[in-house]
Length: 329
Image (tube, rainbow, N blue to C red):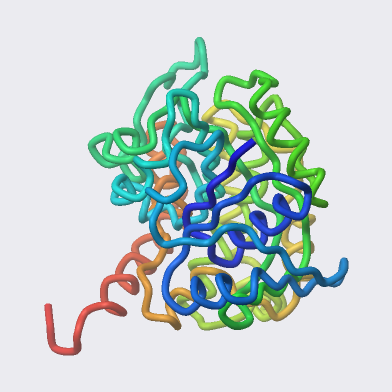
């Protein structure tokens, strides 16, 4: 089995190192100082579960790797439409693409036989079909990440918590390709359940991301600070309640209460969300998949969702102004 990790950042390098430790042939595709450090010293993982170092092949040129069985996509969702030149050399006739993304995936309404929105494209995450043109639909394996990692320094991954990577086919089949990948991930010490309805997992995780990511960027606050401030905690609860309404209107039924989801986020502590980290690093914010698509689904399903719409407007403006030079329109 041959796996390429395209976008071997904090999550991608951690997964790649775990797979390699379990005996899978792994190729990490990375850039700059992180690439150089991993080439020289391997991937060093620092974890409460035990530190280890793995030495998979590392490159910045996918053509060196060639066709693989699985591409684990560690890029942010807002890079999918432009990753075609990097992805193309890795794809064979049966290569699967495992997108470990936050938020609503481009394939969300694919494979939902009999659903009123079956085959519907979500423009926010797949504008004009640009992402589908690059990644396709039949290649897609969904992945919901319940794992927190950071790049402590180039080549060094700090694993903070969680080892679960839920997998699932868009059409709900428990496929051979999912089972094979799950076994390889388990061999490397990860949890990789194959779910018959991954969309419920998507919504459970999204309940947290849709609220905490934009609010943390707008307020510069950690997850614990947002939870411990009465007004923002109440706003989080409202946004989560609206998200559950949209999920159910779209045909899913995630089994978790708003209070339990908030308490889980509070226990994470003074953690900066990925959106706040991107803001501080001057990177584009991953707003479309995390909140924009949810607002689009609210429109498709007739759910009002006023809190989500207002926060979406505010974070959209922040994303624009944080990357526009002072004085520019």
